[in-house]
Amino acid sequence: MNRIASYFSMAALLTLASGISSADVEFSGFASAGVVGGDLDVPLLSGRDVIGESSSFGADNTVGVQVAANVNDDISVKVQLLGKGTVDSYSISAQWAYISYEVSPSVSVRMGRMSFPAVLFSEYQEIGISYPWVRNPMEVYSVVPLATYSGMDILYAIEGDNMSWAIQPFIGSSPGVQALGATGDAELAFGITVMANTDNGKLSVTVANANEANFTFNLGGIDATLSMDLTYISAGIEYELNNLLLISEVVKKDIRNNPKSDFTSISDMVGYYLMLGYRVGDFLPHFTYAGSKSDHGSAVLPAGSTLPGVPASVYTTPADMIIPSNGELFLQKSYTLGVRYDFSSQSAFKLEYQKIIPDDESWGVYFANPGDSTSILSFAVDVVF
Image 1: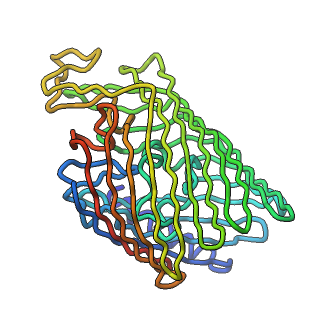
Image 2: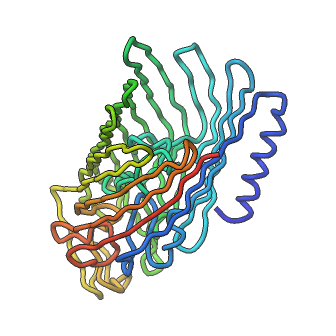
């Protein structure tokens, strides 16, 4: 979003606040600041962010403002504005902007812009204090290219004696986004999430579809489109017993290429991780093993090669290129050893070491061949206010 659009977003936020000054309005915020170093000669993909040498002091820098307002007993409004450090600048966007209507104590309907609920921390993945790591495991959170969607959902809550349930069907579309040199959108996104909550944690299962997901690239001055339907099936658990903390997720992505596509994708894959932590006072040392697998493999095109179906007169690779791209398919495993220290209930410090090992001739999440393995050291401070 450009600077003028950012001003309009802030103006809209202030107008919202002043327009409902008689309502119950709450402001809150969150921020993260960090540094990442190590093998960053080759940029890498983490979630929807790109981390490289130029972003060592910016990739994990985030600030967000949330506004919640009760218009009346049944209707409320929530807005979240997010400023996030990228490779060379900050992007400002509205992550949330929706109206909620409470049909009954157990049923509510939301309409507007919301987080795409494909993974365990979808709603909070930009709020660093919500999870143990400096950044969420890339083997799962880089699989889903959609962060938000515009549409509606229904939240149905079921209260039990020892467990509560939430059922969340949703439908909408994903607006155009700029990512990895391409413009992407999804004409129809829909699915359902079922979540179980106990005093010790939560379990979440999601089935989601993104139909007519189109990603347009400019090749030699000509736009080429990769068009597909995507299906995501994911399951995640967060469970704490005494001092032991377990968090694990698995997500499966299936691809169905559309006939109108200029390319064919073979980027079906599975991503997963398992984290174990043990609380010692305000400290949480933790270890995470993560990986990604596919029935398909990657192929390296040397510099000067043509792409399948694209004439040499239109485009030849300016440097070694891997297909499918690491934005579609990455095969690797990683080991992360970290510690989190909670200064208070509103602030935390994190330090972690990560070793990434590409698999099956893939470059993993890297944009060029990183070699046999790489090491990354990260630390960050997260706050809420």
